[in-house]
Length: 315
Length: 303
Image 1 (cartoon, one colour):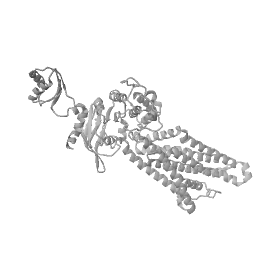
Image 2 (cartoon, rainbow over the protein chains, first blue to last red):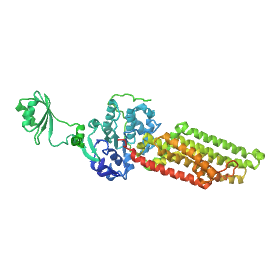
Image 3 (cartoon, rainbow over the protein chains, first blue to last red):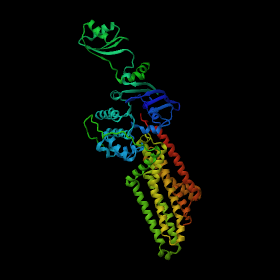
Image 4 (spheres, each protein chain N blue to C red):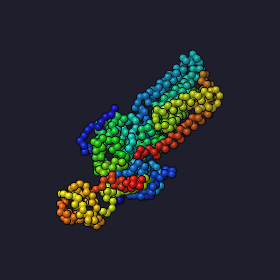
């Protein structure tokens, strides 16, 4: 039985536009169900996507589903769906016509393309509106059409570029539900390029962070949050006097930050466990009511990884 | 007018029974046919884009056919003698200028906005994120335009040439008329190609359909009239830069009508044909360069 190749394999991937290096020597193996592709403007995300779709030439190697993008671009694009950020519609077409056309352009026979267009639009929540011209659609409906046209040819990977941009909270929630549902129901992996880090936190299990053409991080969301070092950070809730517990734990070598009269953040020294907290509480005569690992938000982790804090200080 | 999706309970996802597609995919070399079919279907959908011009071409064919029929009749021959045969023969080449006008109208409503509209709508992202290569796009769009322009520039002349065959009074006339068919095909194809490729090149130069139409109209009508006027005055080759004059010149040369009364040809057939072929070649180069350039910047360009 042949083993499934990784979704994306990069080896010394470099792309230069004249004197400007858009991406520089990327090395990574990226796999997972929903992968967040993060980075500030100019980080190289679009260039990476173009390279992966085999649209622009590059140096090094970029393999998608085991196929080299520079030589197998058309095969890759038949197996990949792309939902663009900007509007990419054809004038005068209804959603069902557009999706049928999209399916045919991806190699499906006309009848199959039409059936799948209806199914994809129904899945994306357009139901009876699918026969109306796209020009009259609201932003949310246009986003749904973009998702449906990316899905219609049954891709193995979906590249979603800012799929929740411009959506109201309800539509955003529904779009995120669809994104979470896709890998389970349709068996396709998703690469989600976005600036909205709460979306990544909500749906992604993997993250790739790019900054100034370099890959700063590639791994799971948990790894991203826990990539600070070996120290264990906790939030401890006590029945009373968090400051007294902070003093006791501080004397034992822990770093403490009182968050409220009844809670404190504790960074334990290397090679210690939560037992240190309980021992400290006993010594201080306090009762611990709750203890949990302190989770860094994806946003904080992202800023830390791209070094914004450090740059700001340096500036 | 904006319409809203029908509300449904949050968290409900409808699926009409998804199954992974297991059939064969068509070769990427066939994508141009999909593009071509869509091009024709889109033009056909709106009456003013194509059907009205086709009706104009059909009208031209009916009128030219009627003229051909009347002058082929014995009564006409008995009234004006050999001139009747001359007029019957001339009906086809004289009608070419009317087909040329129909071709220009199709180029205005379809051809001159074909690429510009795609750039304007962001359709390059739609196309090139799929297994469509720039050459598939160019061939597909060009083939679609050729089908449309052939409908108005080629079909009519070919029908008229076949009608002329049918109206032949004897075997000698039939043999003489037989040569009209390949000539009609040649001039029809040339017209169809010119009115497909050249406006498409103009449309690829601008990212706005209306501006592209304006530019093409200015080139065809204003620049064409100017160079045609200069050519008429100087009797030089410069008049060949006018597409309409060149098509007329080639048609008259093909059908041996250079000296037909009142239809003086200002440009020799050689320069006229060369001009048309150069127009087509330059247009294809421009479209090719512009589409390839747009492909690289289309996908993911906004992020």
